[in-house]
Image: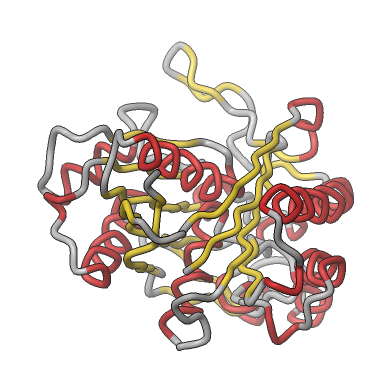
Length: 319
């Protein structure tokens, strides 16, 4: 059976960088308040002309270049996003058009902050079944567009960005095991309830969040799903070289690492610079760890994320 192996990674962050101090001039907050509660120091915000597909396209080009793969060789494109360019078509098809290719399946996965893990697991199934040989998996979001910038409880937490991975069929182990979960009973904790009806936006178009509820649920489920993956794969936490988590809140990340017995030196942490970029956060952190030389070939990575739905999952990967 073929395995899905990471051939290349790429990322893109918008040029506009907004620090906590700059944000404090617009809303009743402070650098100290944000940093102590989240670990966030800055975030990147998409320019007015930049859409989610633009961020995704830029990250995809860098991943393809890193993999040494031409866009025409890709036979599957999956974009994980909760902020698509439009109601339809899928943002993946817009990225496909911008890459100048056609014919291969291209679709979106919507699992919010868990979207990248969901998309990787989907691409893995395609490759293992022989339905694809080279897949482009992208996590991209522009959450700045669904923020109420007068609400300090939410607007300080999020940023925009995109990360991409090229997966290829290989005889060597790549994605070792993954586990996905969802529970719609918790949808009230985190959502953006607006919908388009009769030519108008019905309901609030801004993100709504129960911060304490999300925190408690995330800490519990991320620890549990990591344990599940390790147990079912026959691995132990000691075999993990790097934890590459969804970058939402440093306290959540620290709690997960503590549960796994991993020191801070084994965590790829980018939340301080990127804030929560939803589906983009894991591939952004992955690319950062690879490009700065910390993550090396042959090492084992635990990637995990949780988002509105609630949807969550984890994945053990040999890079």
